[in-house]
Length: 112
Image (tube, rainbow, N blue to C red; front, top):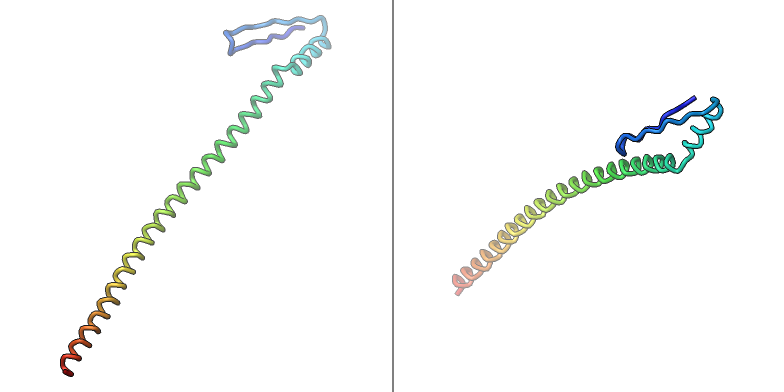
């Protein structure tokens, strides 16, 4: 009974392990699975999942920000248009008051 452990990342190291029985082989395999390296791999996988989740959140936040920027620009244009309309309205109202004042001046001259 034998099995092999291969490290592909670190320069292709390989370990051949042999046992006298299948039970001993299974005990070795279980011990290796419980070793700290396997825990590190599990933690790495958990962190990768969390990282992917955070990337998804970041992407959704970027999309929301883009949407809000567009909305802000649209509202700024609307405010600009309303200000222009208000200025035109004020000019019309002020212009009408001036005409009324002029007419009253004319009427005053006629009356004199």
